[in-house]
Length: 195
Image 1 (cartoon, rainbow, N blue to C red):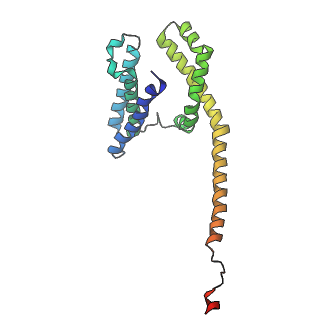
Image 2: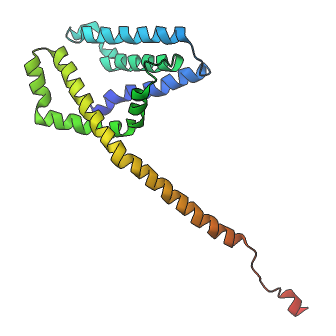
Image 3: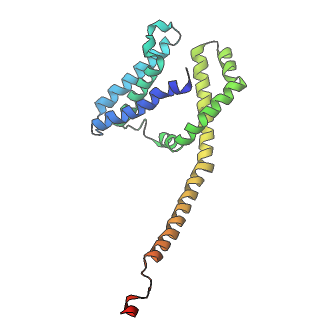
């Protein structure tokens, strides 16, 4: 199964979560938010508990990616319906700011760790798939956040500022050019000469 097959349910999940909240007129509801948080926890617990069991527990037509996407929808909607301080704070704000760098850099970090054999070493040392996965996730998350924060501060943010300056300069130059072009020029009226 290729990478896009695994990512597609999450891509659709983000759009679906937005449409669901939009259809509810962007309402806020602590009750719905709490219900969705509990649902998210239960779905993730089910996935973690069944990860080492036989694949017969989850039917083949509803593979694990769909359940993770369902947990993602539930989580997104819980934050929309109940924007509490646990999820809406400086840390989450920073993660939102560096999200584009996170998106760009996480595959690079994962591939480098795979080729270096880091994940294999962690799984072997931990002796457990679940523990190996959790340790790998924490290390990857930490490195990706550090790299993304650096990239955002020293590349993305200065790049956005440069873009803004260039666009403003271009607009100023084009506005002055357009103003000159719209100024009526003194064209001689040739009709008077022939009259």
